[in-house]
Amino acid sequence: MKDKHRRPWLSVIAGGESLVSHAGGALLVETARRSGLIKELSRLLGPWRRPLAIHDPAKIVLDLAIAVALGGDAACDVAVLRAQPGVFGLVASDPTVSRLIARLAEDADTVLGAINTARAQARERVWSWAGAPIQDGNVVIDLDATLLDAHSEKEQATRTWKKGFGFHPLLSFVDHGSGGAGEPVAELLRPGRAGSNTAVDHVAVVDAALAQLPRPLRTPDPAGRVAVLVRTDAAGATKEFAAHLATLGVTFSVGASLGHFDIHTALQLLPATAWTPAYQARKPRAAEHGVQIETRDGAWVAEATGLVNMAAWPAETRLILRKEHPHPGAQLRITDADGLRITGFLTNSNFAGPAHHLADLELRHRRHARVEDRIRNGKDTGIRNLPFHDMAQNRIWLAIAALAADLLAWTARLALPTTAATYEPKRLRLRILAVAGRIVRTARQRTLKIDPAWPWADMITTAHARLTALPVP
Image 1 (cartoon, rainbow, N blue to C red):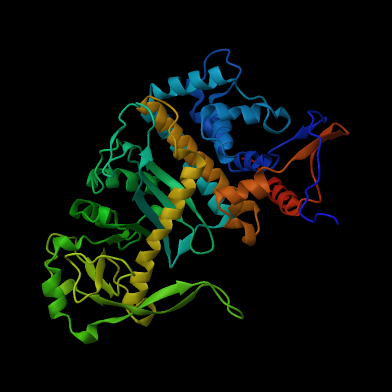
Image 2 (cartoon, one colour):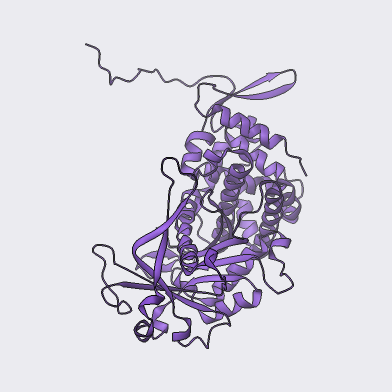
């Protein structure tokens, strides 16, 4: 009787002419070319090129970013690209890469400014083709911090608030909404002991994030408003940061630290009729299309702006509260009341009418939780382990990881179908980027062939055709 669970027996040898792995990385190369990222980086990083040098600093930086996008987490992983010159061209040696990172780190602020300028110009070009990720009239920027463990003594690695050891970077992402992922737009590497609600850090990151947006999207209208929504958790609920956002003219939605307000008095003054059912979003079921919005059982929202002292906050700031039955096993806090979990957020949105009910604003704020997925994907794309000892070099590495995430997001938006545009990096690598191919040379041309039996072969070839149809700057 045959064993149905037996796998085919294989003999593994080294051989095969013109075979390449990670053939899907050609999509990343083409995205960098068509977006103008290669051209702009080459121009802006030109001052760091040594006389008679073979390798362009921009090419080395982009090779590192592509290696990270393919799954690498250290500078030495650029060897994967070096082994396949037919796809990735001439790739620098490990010592050359190391020397360049050290040289760039000597003037890290200027180099990071150059890289960010190139990213902003490439982003504007990509958005002109794929469309700006606008939701309800705004570009949404989410800010959040995370902890990165350091397993050796590194410069400015310190004890963290969770009693670990490492770094505490503050990151920001443009949210693509429910039908997409996101793009990193600003990164600030900080020591592990950095505070969660340090206003000056939030100001620096949001300013850098706004600089990444195309100019028309960050230019105030005649009323002084900018079509940008900035969301943070309670770490961003500082008066200084809110005042800065109000000065910029952007809309903000930040989690409220209820300990700063007399919440118990406000709850006693709120009439029962002030509470309205909260909303929740869910995936569509059979015969439904798109994300479905429905009321959530056991959760209500109400406005408490006029019941607490808001004098220190910018004008038009509103406090919106949410109460709900705690999850099983959750412990109530001092700000909770009547056995219900009380949370809140601050916003300067002044929408009116049923289309922008309090529950809509509260649901919009809770969608800030998407940033946790962006950070998780970022940790899968180079930022989990900072590979260098020096702080300046690790700042350069963080920018390279952001470049990698940009390339993944831009490739998805420009070339992949809707069903694949929401792939997270792990799935994108597994199905698209890590595919094997064969380079065939005919009629003085080189062609990269993908096995037609690969389930996603058509998706890969179609994506490459879409990219090559775009003009080169």
